[in-house]
Image (cartoon, rainbow, N blue to C red; front, side):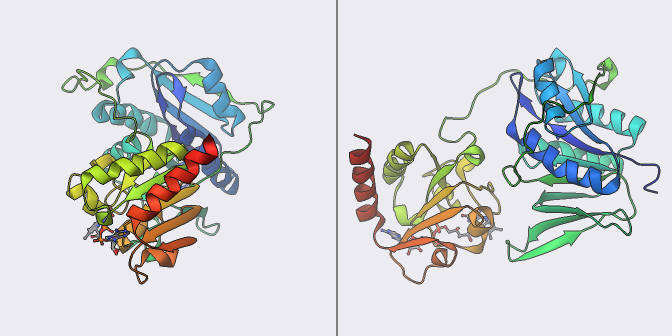
Length: 334
Ligand SMILES: Cc1cc2nc3c(=O)[nH]c(=O)nc-3n(C[C@H](O)[C@H](O)[C@H](O)COP(=O)(O)OP(=O)(O)OC[C@H]3O[C@@H](n4cnc5c(N)ncnc54)[C@H](O)[C@@H]3O)c2cc1C
């Protein structure tokens, strides 16, 4: 079966004409898979306003071919239309593997497309390898609240589809000498789903947007006691150049908003520094943050599970530690 389906595709993402970093991270994953299969690496961009320099940067970061389907009608991400465009390309060109980012767009587009292609999809992969004996993609992801790693295959269907967590891969170094091809594909009007249109666009509040892109996250849980106390988390995050996240308990209580929720049913984050204030460390929370580079936990309970994953643990009251941290950082800054 795999003979008919060749090449590894990655789905690039852009916003207002600029490629998102995850587009390059996916190319690093895709490059090693394409090399292992002896196939081409193709970056597929569906969108609008992305110029040649940006498209070329996909090649200098590992793509052999860029398929660009751009049209003003594709500026807003509308899953029905994007899925129509992707399916049309897949049906004509039959890729072996399709990788997308586990972002809002990727997590919406890929299940929609996989269902219509009657193939499997593994979401949120942390590792991808090729089984050299069969050519199957080995798709590894955390399961059961992050307690085990499951490796999943799609032996009977093609393409093999997976999403990859943003910031789980270093992009390849840029190589301007790499040679590749850019193919502009005209949008077929019949692929536009006219039932859905974007009427307006409202950006998330600055503290909630791009939580996954932040190098520093200060997260609060039920131990913060009330919504007003999150102000101190915002002060600390500002001093560290970071963003504020939250446990599900804090979100359920209305102290933070859902886009800030970290964990199994929220976002997966991989910051350089994760500070957990008054968070117990339930497995569902750990599933979204335990691979952070450095974890600092502050909790009054010395037996809190969060200390098992923390690099630095402070057994103490968040309301003593927070003002102290904030004033030391302010001193340093001044
Ligand atoms: C299907 C499912 C999905 C879920 N998804 C998520 C998810 O995505 N994200 C998530 O977070 N949870 C998720 N949960 C919920 C999870 O099981 C926990 O209930 C939740 O993480 C607890 O939040 P918490 O740590 O803020 O609260 P608690 O568990 O109540 O912990 C509060 C902590 O604060 C400490 N504390 C109290 N006072 C202070 C103080 N003054 N200073 C310092 N520390 C103090 C306490 O010792 C305690 O450890 C999910 C659960 C299920 C069943």
